[in-house]
Image 1 (cartoon, rainbow, N blue to C red):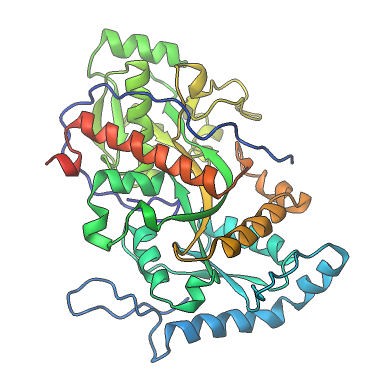
Image 2: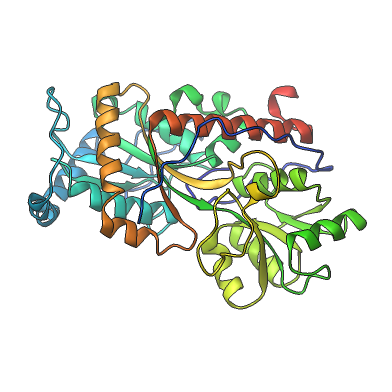
Length: 405
């Protein structure tokens, strides 16, 4: 299930077959493009992760405040450089009057962590207060929803908008389609309060380079239809964004396939590259080394726009069928659901401004196929809801949607 963009281990759900999956139209409109540790928390008596935050007797709010304030000195140089740029003015109520936390529900060095560090650095150049990155690795595979629950427990620090966090859409929504997240964490989609969706990284359908059918999506479709069940799909099992992407594509393009459980994303890509499986869905940072070694081919990528070199000839999925494809990693920043709209909108303006900074854009676009985007709170929420709707239908068609059991 979703644990930041890294994905983590997925719980495999028994598979029978992959029936048709419906396609729906894009409800959120045209994308606006921009050019270019803490200690482990104590365990609760019931064995579930505690929401009490760092140990050693420190109160969580004091810990985060102390952490943020300790970063103030190290941010002096960045703040000084911001003098030459136009900083956003605080609101009339004084917000923000303390550092802003950007929480990464993943480990340092992860894709979410790199994104957070770079956009926080850019945002600090435009903010009257520094934006400080903090990591939490102690949540389970449902980290986004457990993280929201923990943030809501942090009192005024959270409710005023001083804690923001990174998530990927629709990965977090696939969690909700796979399992009863509300009963497990107490959270629903109403607890998601997006600030901005700032970038999109597509999933790609990759195949082993020596596949018997050829090296195009048309070749794969023809072979799979002539040889039902012969194509081996390496998957972590229903419940992850990459698995959902593959099932979405397979239904849309009528690709019969047999599932082979294959571990985490890196292990699945390796299985395809080594010929132990035939196809899988994979993000650029995972598939890249195998592509560079000539061991995999890219057959399609999620979305509707042409990909940059060296993948400019890879067909975007939306050019192959009618309907919109939500299955990219859309990196989003959100905040507590009880944050005043005025504070959330100020945060949107801050991160939107940061995401237009030329130095920031240049650094982010070093990631192959990454697209810098700007979806406001309403557009971000519409995308998340579309991802949930599509994911639920996938699980209904598989006969494993939890609410139907």
